[in-house]
Amino acid sequence: MPRYAAFLRAVNVGRRRVKMDVLRNHMTAIGFENVQSYIASGNLIFDSSLRSLGKIERLIESHLEEELRFAVTAFVRTKRDVQTIAGNPHLVSEIGTVSVGLLKHVPSKETVQSLMSRANSKNMFEIDNREVYWRCLTSLLDSEFSNVDFEKVLQQEATFRKSTTVQAIATKLE
Image (cartoon, rainbow, N blue to C red; front, side, top):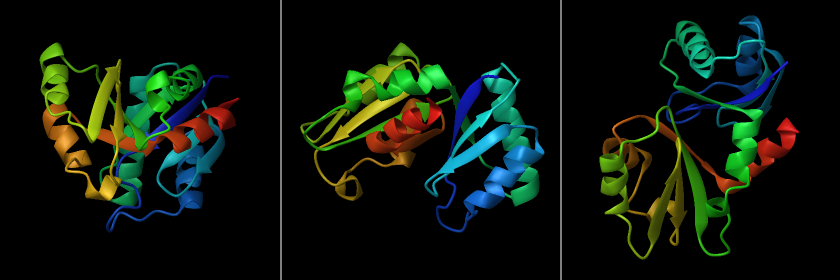
């Protein structure tokens, strides 16, 4: 059975608090198997007989919105996708912090150009398929960029994870 990872946007941020055991139970309730969570920021690993990432995302989103009473955006990737992201050379840096932003859709060339024009000596970006690699040479909290800024430029929702989180999830998927 195929193995997947779901990265949930804005879970355990602000008032949108959910315990990981509750999320795991919801995932099991909608038919996913071998559900695991990784740290309390909405990272889930599971098996599913479903093959369509879009269907899996919509199933998670609709169920969680109904049960949790707030919208949750799910970014689902296959085991292979996560392993490819974790092995991407843009994710490795000995300088600064590298994060990966997960997107629903491949951004247009114009959108990519708009993001790249905002790069500077402290914030560098690379886009590969549905992922944005962000190397920040300052503290992420001190950066002039935020998730909201990325979403405005990219014209779609995104969720970011540090490189170490993505690499750990890739290992758990093995």
